[in-house]
Image 1: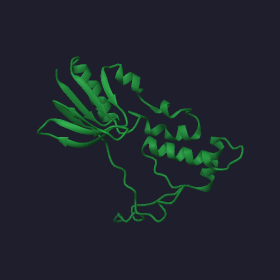
Image 2: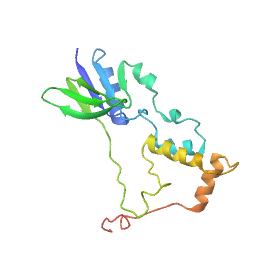
Image 3: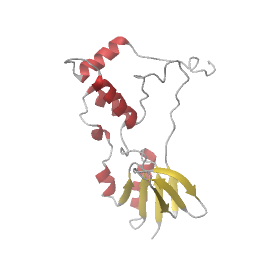
Length: 179
């Protein structure tokens, strides 16, 4: 039986796994995902933070159970640490920190992009959050919940944050050449 290993749980990785399943019902598919949110909707983050979407799990295009129901072995919270192309295997770090070696016949990397943190003064201060991954979103939510805001609900909090203003920057501010 062929073994197909896919690293990355965003649209590219999930789509590749589902397509591989369509093309070959017998292939052994394993999907390595760095967090616990495969295939989530990044566009839904503001709706989650405002409370319109009640649970972060509801931002998933496909739930883990849906992916696994397609015969795809899903490894959430696993990190690929080493690829051995000659030996056709990938070393991954499990959630508890131990290593596991995964063999493959076909390997696909669908890890997506790495966000850039521009060199802006104050970007590393408490209360300044990037919003790219679900982990970022949950960290911001934890911060917002910890604020002493009395009886304001999340939507009112969002309106208050909008009233304060939004931080913006240009390419010039980030140190890039201005166009």
